[in-house]
Length: 175
Image 1 (cartoon, rainbow, N blue to C red):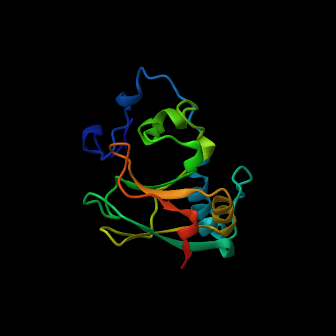
Image 2 (image 1 turned 60 degrees about the vertical axis):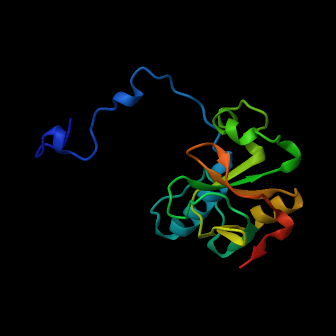
């Protein structure tokens, strides 16, 4: 049922969810988004009237901005809802694994969900041959990725393709 003052057809979001009818629930591994969730929780944690014991929260003081050089192909911008950052361990991934992100998140595919990280909230994305990408993440998480020799690349969520060169963790700079 919709709002009592408005007919259902005028509401911006239909109260019926036909798109979920007949679909089985799936299990999705959320570990790839923990870095992004830590940033969100650290930003709002002081204002929350309740604790979040399930999520390992990073302190706001532990968060920092990082920048990495990338060569981007295509014409995406930071404002396109199809761009994300994909962090990965090059030693544990093959060449076409980005096409299998959906399977990886469900526990299948060529690598484990713990071997990737996804950041949807980029701070900056400069396209072109001298491109730069900037994001916010906990220092501890970045130190862990640097120790594991991870890399970051711009990822198109609409086509499951990497749309930039990979930037190894050794090239990431604290802003």
